[in-house]
Image (cartoon, rainbow, N blue to C red; front, side):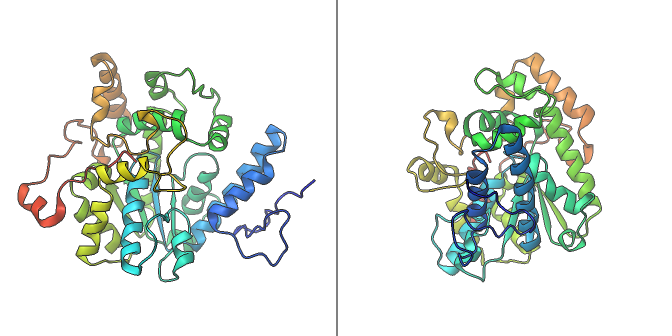
Length: 356
């Protein structure tokens, strides 16, 4: 029987179980796959416990090696943003366009590319990142790194999160999340509305996430808060603001090409063709419109999915529980107007951005 992976190192430089000690260090993605593979034969309870601990240590190692941290609830624009940033580095250093930014693959190809830690910092093992920034495992070196927080209207997140969780989340991650819930999600039968109203993973939980991270950032020195709605309406300006903030400025032409690469039409076409071989943008084997990572990406789109009575309940929850300083109290005000034509002609037209 293969031995269980050693979890004593926070960096988790695991060899595969049958590989010699001289094997080259795995990428972060490779380490995650090794963890999932090695723990698959274990009884469910032990499997969940060991996976949670090992994957949490992997998140800690990623954060400590990273030069910058990007935080966002699933479906807040995380994948879209890192796709554009990755494209900027690919253009700058001539790297292959299929390599992702979420882990360390780009940095392993070219040492000039910094490592990023992109996470939600909230669900199951990813909560370990929050502990480094504000919890019992507070790490001043990690807390001193630039931290970007991605916001989005919580109701738009909830609708997209429903589709992501029921159609695209991997079985291993879904199992871990469900194990943390008092009332696990039955993905085959739960309705959109019941998911949105679910107290442990739906709208209320998303509001808690946004409020919690807003409070956390108040105690950090190097932070930037970005709204998905602003990134969508002014992608060039916001992308430039983010890359300047993290200390990685790019030429304007490079950023414009990265924004064009990240357009809805282009990403949808690339996803459908199987261009992305792994990661969040990889095409799923199941069919159907909702199985695409790139969907509508429309600000305020949740208002098309529910009845007037349901919308009133959503608005009540948002107005009564979400921090007003996040800018989503007025549902109409949360949806920005299109940029003016002159700015669009200058290369900063609204991105036809995907749902993250």
